[in-house]
Image 1: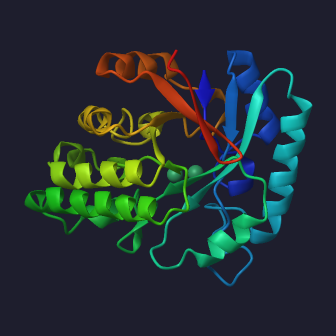
Image 2 (image 1 turned 30 degrees about the vertical axis):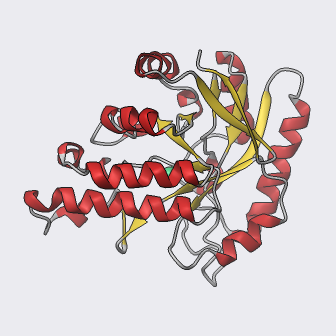
Length: 269
Ligand SMILES: [Zn+2]
Ligand SMILES: [Zn+2]
């Protein structure tokens, strides 16, 4: 089992220390664990622009140092990858590239959390959206993820249809052309798409992305990786066997993992 997307207490909305996630992974027999807490909001002036969303900028070096120390300590029993999940803000990513360039990261996840000025999980954003507009909104979100991929800053694109998280109605909205555009953008950027099982912690349930997008991803040859997006240690590798089975049925054969930015493929299960 592998899991390339986990958080911990530094972000302010997850529980458990980095060591707790490593321990949970060891207990479950996980072979490759990515530590990928939210990046600080590097484009803001304040040190701690978003308490309860992300750690202060000044805390980031300690996060990386602790992750690297765990990687070494447990090198004989589990491969720990050191990473971070960055928010994508169109046109404002230079501070992120600068801030992240100095660290020996194995990979970086790029995720669109803020979309058209609001958090994607903010239920208030749907109050003025009509049902017949949902396909268009979803298409715009997919295009934002495509732009995130094209930025070339990321190895993994995070939860690519998570806009549905707290608005399940969006899941059924059609946006096939934009989905295909996004998938080609991910592939052409040399990046991979994660299958993220944290939908169960939101109103929509299920996984990001949904089955239709997974099938399209296989058609376009988009590589994939596994992401629990655990914010509690017990969720490490949550639903891994179920995901591997579905992906095998679709035709996928392996997961992509990264060492210092270099991709390699490991068997699906
Ligand atoms: Zn989080
Ligand atoms: Zn995320």
